[in-house]
Image (tube, rainbow, N blue to C red):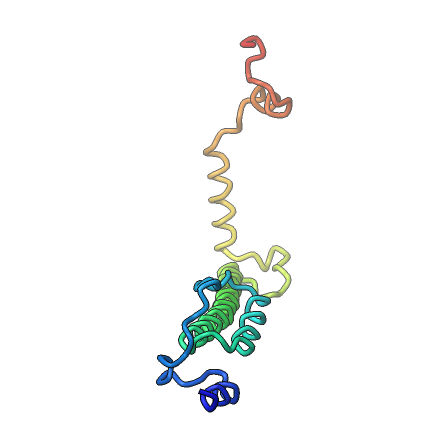
Length: 156
């Protein structure tokens, strides 16, 4: 038994083959570890190395849990960052496509009569036609919107 204890001290993890010879796990400790934070990781790691009464299975389980949580934390951060990057690239691409469609490539807009293109003229004409199609709201509604009241003051 002494030989076994010194080996346990030299190699705190033990080997899974001898798990049957270990003492039974401590019943007072909860089997499920606390919710994950960076601090709990530190505490759990120190507890694993200092606690010699825990069974090998328990230590392995706790170690596995700590490793899994650490990997989860890292991988989720990587995913988050890559998602942000993709979002940024997409918006940048969309912006450039829009600029190309407008004919603007980070250059000042065209000025002067001779620089106006036929397409631009057609666009403005269509815009004017659209504006003509939708009649402006009657002046009463505009006034009432400005006052923030009903259209008919007598209805109150």
